[in-house]
Structure formats: C-alpha cells, structure tokens
Amino acid sequence: MITLAEENYLKAILSISLNSDGKVSTNAIAGEIGTSAASVSDMLKKLQDKKLVKYKKYKGVSLTKKGNSFATSVIRKHRLWETFLVNNLNFDWGEVHYVAEQLEHIKSEELVDRLDAFLDCPKFDPHGEPIPTKDGKIPTTNTIPLNKLSEGTNGKVMGVTLDEKPFLDYLTKLNISIGTEIKLLEKISFDQSISIKIGNTKQHISNDVAKHLLIKTN
Amino acid sequence: MITLAEENYLKAILSISLNSDGKVSTNAIAGEIGTSAASVSDMLKKLQDKKLVKYKKYKGVSLTKKGNSFATSVIRKHRLWETFLVNNLNFDWGEVHYVAEQLEHIKSEELVDRLDAFLDCPKFDPHGEPIPTKDGKIPTTNTIPLNKLSEGTNGKVMGVTLDEKPFLDYLTKLNISIGTEIKLLEKISFDQSISIKIGNTKQHISNDVAKHLLIKTN
DNA sequence: AAAAAAGTTTAGACATGTCTAAAAATTTAG
DNA sequence: CTAAATTTTTAGACATGTCTAAACTTTTTT
Image (cartoon, rainbow over all chains, first blue to last red; front, side, top):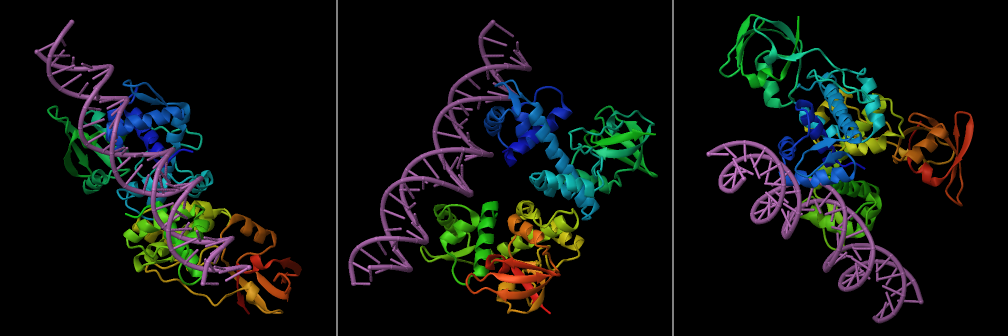
C-alpha cells in the first residue's frame, strides 16, 4: 500500500521532471514539498525499496514505470476534483488547490471513474492543465508560454501552469482568465518583463508571470 | 489541529453513546474502531488533554461539548458525502461506506457548506439516517425499529441504522429499500425472529436484521 | 588541482499511533 | 466478602515521517 506522503513525493518528482528533463535532485524535491533535504533522502530510499523510483546516492532520482503511473494517477485525481469544485460547487479557481490536495489522496478507483463520467470526461481542468486519462495519457495542446511569444503576436490564454492562490488572484486582478485574448506589445530585454494588451487596456507584467501563461496563437 | 485518528475516536464514542446511554467503555471503543484496548487507553489520555473528552481511569469516557461538536461534524460530512455518492455518482447504497469514511476527513468548511448546498441541504442520507445541520442539530423522525412493532402492523421503511455492505446487500436481496412497505405478520418468541410481508411475498428475518430497520407506521 | 562552496546523506532525536505482555483495578461469582 | 474473571492501564517496543547537526560527495572557483 502506498502512503499519502509517498504519493506526494512521487507527484513532486513527476512535476519537477516535467519542467526540467533528466534526474531530479534532492533539493528540488525538498523545495517542492516544503521539507528538508534530509527527509527527502530518507524517503527516496523507501521509494527505491518499493520500486517506485530509480535512485543513486548523490546522483538524483527518476520515476520507474510504476512510480510514474502512481504519480500520474494522483495528478489525474487532483485535476478531476478541481474541475468538480469549480464547475459544480462554484469555487473560485484560486481556492481549489488546498482542497484538491486532500481529495487527490482518496483511495477508490471506482470513485475516480464515476467522478470522471459525472464531469463528462473533461480533458482540461479549470486552470487549463491537461487531465491524464485513466490509462495515463496526457492530452496535449499546441500552446506556448507567453514569454516565448514574439512582439506583435496575438493569442488566447489556454491555461496556466501554476496553481497558487496569490498568482491566480493576481491574474483575476489583471482580468486574465482562460479564454482571454492577449496581444504581446513589447519585451523588455533588461528584465524580460513584457507589455501586453488585454481588450483595450495595456498592462505590464514580469517574466515570472508570463512564463506561467499558456497561449495559443491566432 | 485534530488528527484523522482523533476524529475516528470521537466519532466512535458518539456512535456508541447514541446506542447506549452513559459512559462509554474502553473495550467498546476498541471493538468499534477495530484496535486494542491499550491503544484506546493511550488515545483517551490525548483526547482528554485536548479537552475533547471527559475521562476518568477505569470509569469510562464521555464527549465534552467541543468533542461532541467535532464528532457530529464528522458524521455530517460522512452522510453528505454518502448522499453525493449515491445521488450523483450512482453508487449503490452498500458501496459508499468505505469511500465516505475517507471523504469525511477532508478539512474545509467551505467544501462542506458548498456540498450541502449542491445537494439541496438534504435532511437524510441514502440509508435514511439523519444528516446533522451545520450547527449540530440532528433531524428527528417518528420511526421505530421493526422488531418493536406489534403483530399485524403496517409500515414503511424510513431508514436503516447499520451501514455495512453485507447487511445492505442482504436487504437488497430481500427487496427492501427506503420506502418499502412492510407488514409485520408474526413474532417468534423463541429467538425474536419475525415474519413479514413485502408486496405479496412472505419473508422471515432475524431480530438482528429487524432491529436495524426503522419503520414509520401507517 | 587544491580549496571553497554547494548539495546530499547519515546519525540521532522526536511525535504519532499502533502493538503485545504484564500489572493493576473493577466487577462478578461462589 | 474473598476469589476468580474481566476490564483497563502501564511499560516497552515498533513503524512512519519528520527534524537538526554533522559528515561526506560533488561541483565550482581560483
């Protein structure tokens, strides 16, 4: 039986490895989970024993097929629950993360299947992030992060890649949500910050914000 | 912060004290939770320290106001989730207990409020058991257990007081569900078993089954 | 290529919640 | 009203997951 803590480690490892290829470092995991490097070391040994990760001391870690499958399943559950919370319980998209972090650990395959059906098998969650299918496939999109767009390009916000309340609240304040049309006006080379046009309003946002906005160009 | 294990102890104490007035014994709790009397003793001390129970060594335990409020809230969550699982996800009434036992521990007042609203503030769960309100009040019914009815009486099944798959599966097999009309034909004094009529079929059931069926007489 | 810095692991400790075995208190029976 | 049976508690142990401090690798700098 896989424990709650183990699921969180696997999820963290998957999430890090998606944003940066290759082996995942102890420190990166510690940062993601909010724990000490020492605790991570301890846990990696246990996950190794359970054949959920491949791990060489000092050399980083990667998920086994089995580990990847568990991690993907946790993300599937997280995103399905977020969809339910926003679509059916009228939560705001910034409020759901903490609750979904709990719900994602409920153990019942039947429950996930039925929830998926109840929601009409959604492909994307309320943040535009892809929901893995039952067999672990992750829907793809042809989107690129806003900070990679070239000046003068128009596009539509298809998703965000950060699920934290302060970030999402800021987007709401900027009048940005899924579906919003954005034009990239200017990139400042000094700090990679960018000017954008939303509707008829000009805004200036940092690279840190821009990189978490997924855009589909028109 | 109250832990999952603590919530389960409080729930068990409440549940026992509802079926048998006065102080609750260590052994009874151990039986309900499926743990050892030693573990119960340990936990009662911790709950006492947190002012959740009143406890005198060897003399049994009872809930404080605070403990009762937590326990009632857990039961409220359990029954709301069971309602969701049956009404919206089409689970069978015998399948929901295990899943609801996990869902009842999700921590988010907002979630419970919104779930309650989503379900249209139900007063009873799919087993006919009353769902405590947000402020801890428990809806009442004028029902009596089937085994207390007198011979020849007609009535309707309003609820069951046991949420275990084997029991519920057996009821389904007997064609008994919430709303079923039942006539008590005969009580056997030897073993308190009873003969009943459901539709046009005669059945014979044990006292153990009959006492968990709540009847409203016509 | 040695020294310094950064990253990682080990050692030892602690909190939670569980267990078995043994001791103590209470209840029941003769 | 003792003695036996039952119930409950304590003692000591273990598993999980966490921590800090110290030791050990690896990487970077000079």
